[in-house]
Image: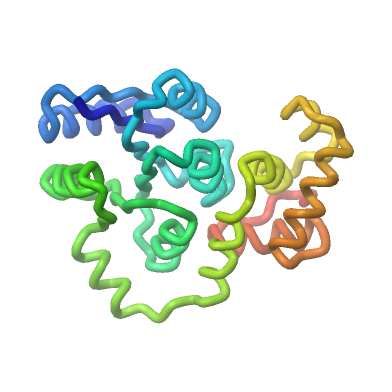
Length: 219
């Protein structure tokens, strides 16, 4: 019996997706999470989960960092992206950071069913129209390289970077993660070195360019 986890903050979309999964995979067990913290809890409680369907625009996260954090924290679980965005740059960066598939939220039930079947069979998947669009679009080598560097960070480093991107100070990050402030600083030293930046501001600018989102105030 297959086990999946939907991570999306919209209950109605989760309900519709559950029904599509039930039609495509009778008997499959489907858990739900409304945010990243709940997703971690669900995966800890059900380590046999095979596939996570992750909303790329999940509130409280920054761009692709949620994907990187899930992949680093749960390397045995495949993660596919759910998104209303289908621009080639975002798709390529998602795959560079470890996504196994890319499902658009305007996909038809038939496309979703085809995607789920392929992903659970261990294949990488995206809609054919999106595959054709990527083939016609030049690559952004710099952005792809940055995504790969982000994917090399540890789970704790990604958690720290996520909070830096949200404008948190070192003491706030330490309190939230239950670690010493000096440990936060040590993580940031490694993160900045891997990203090729010197400070929090430069890191925020890089992440904003990567995700297409504005840098938070105070970053």
